[in-house]
Image 1 (spheres, rainbow, N blue to C red):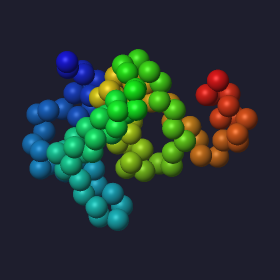
Image 2: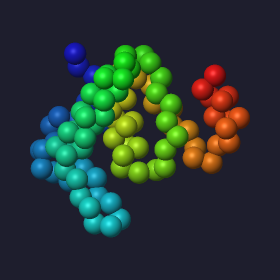
Image 3: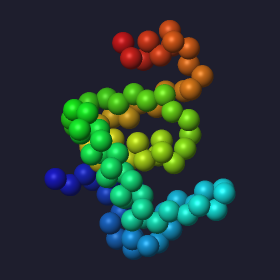
Image 4: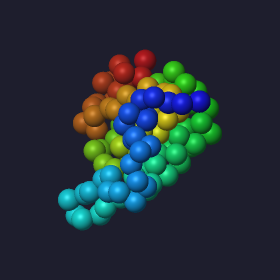
Length: 97
């Protein structure tokens, strides 16, 4: 099955060794690195029972791992709901309910 949104975000025509993510500390990840990390995220979500159309809520800091989780959700056909790390328990409850 083709996931057109993932293909739009991570076009397959990019060479695998081309730079995809360059962090402020100099860490550089290629398109192949990012594709592999997002495939692992999608597989982990599927192993947890996430199916296309499911919502995945995560209270996460802005990071490359959060990006991999987002793209893993896209690959799995799930909806990613990032939750601010400053939310209180009652605020989190609102979103989860």
